[in-house]
View 1 (cartoon, rainbow, N blue to C red):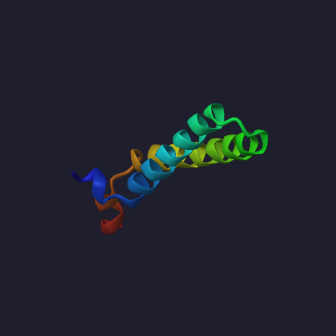
View 2: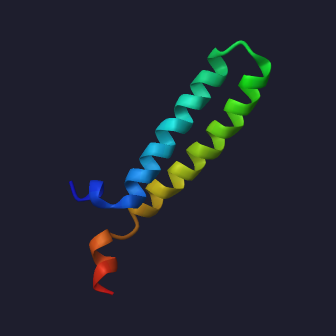
View 3: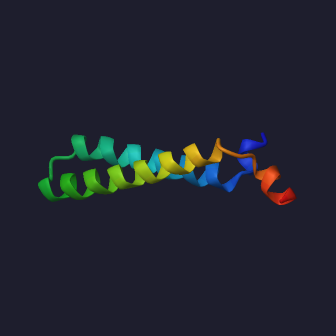
Length: 67
């Protein structure tokens, strides 16, 4: 439950899920332009989300409040 209070984890999980959905949709769609845009946006969103989730495991949010 403590991870859900950390905004880095919540925002990262959101962008990771949206990025993965865009990647899946880019391979499933038939329009060439939509594939290209969705694929690049999905990659960028998934990378950003993965970084945010990675940074959320580095330090607890409660530790930052004590500094």
